[in-house]
Each structure stands twice: as C-alpha cells, then as structure tokens.
Length: 229
Image (cartoon, rainbow, N blue to C red; front, side, top):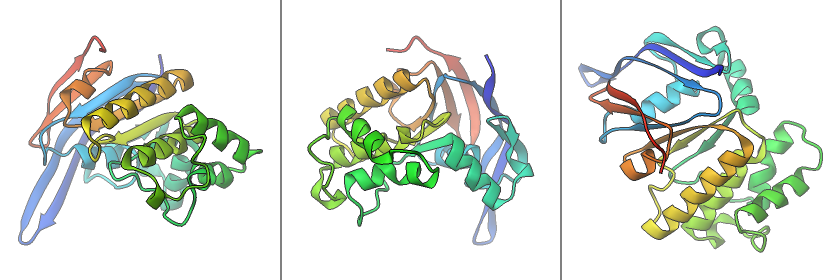
C-alpha cells in the first residue's frame, strides 16, 4: 500500500516572550492510503500543531512532510493551497462554516472552487446522507451544533479528498450528538475510501481507528496498531 503521508524528524518551535518553546520534537511516522489514524495526547502535547504541519498550513523548523507524494517544503504558499484544495478535507472542532451561506452553499463551495459540474446536486446528495435533507436553505445560526458539524462533514467529503484531517471533531458536542457525528464520519469515510487522520483527546474515539500515535510533551511515546471498535 502506498504512503499518503510521510513525516520525518519534524520539529517545531515558537518564541514566547524571551523563551523558545519546542512544541514538537523529532516526530517521525507515516500513514498508508485508506488508513484511519488517530493522534492523541494531553492538552499542550502538540497535536493540533502537528496536524497543521501535516496539512501544509504551517512550516516546520526542521524535518520534512511529504503529502500525497509531494514534499511540502518544495511548494510556495499558493502551491500548498492548491494541493490542499485538490487533495485535503478538513473538519474542525468549531465547525468553521461560513455564516452568510446556507448549509447547501457551505457544502458546494469546495466543489465550485474546483469547477465541478452539477455541484448543487452533489451537495444535496451529501446533505441527504448526513440526515439534513430538510435543512438545505438554513443558515448556520439556524442549526444546532450537531447539525452544523454534519454540514461540515458533508463539506469535507464533497470534493472527494484523498486525506481528511479532523481536529477534535466532537469537542464542542454533547456525548450523544458526538456519537452520531462519529458514526457518520466513519460511514462516509468507509464509503469514500478516504485516509482519515483524527486529532482527539478522546481515547474511545481514537480506538476506532486502525492506528494511534500518542504524543506527550511534543514527542511520540507510542505508535501502535489497534483492533478498531
């Protein structure tokens, strides 16, 4: 199986006042196409920073990231954005929907950017899959948190990404709603065959994936296979 993500000796530092903080220290791992992969660790362990580096949203101080066969260091800002538009989907803890667009419009934005034919039909089909066929024309402010995250799920899968990064996808949801969203996430992912990378502090969610990378203090303390629940 081909590797879709190769992370090698990744280090990231930030300046805080007069101090230099090493947020990630010599991180190395890879992910195969179609794999489901969780990154876990306590708050402040570097999970979200690592996700941003893997997606090319930020640059490391040392080490390399190869995403979908491309060394991100070889790309400028515009080229990295173009790669993300083609290959990457995102789901965020705080949904990140555009407030002035309806649910359907939010879902079809990535499709329009890529010049898809019949984006409206595709968007409607995806919203139907996540149980929001009666919410096409509702704005985010008219939707519950769980409904907003389901719109975000539909948007993330709309352009058939090769890899999907989910940063604490249930972090702002109650347990019951979060469970429904997780179930949908894995169903859509299995149907699409997308590589899934989930950042979470929720070990139960992490164990649903095929592999778990455990971080502590910016270092990898374990990289283990699981028997997904």
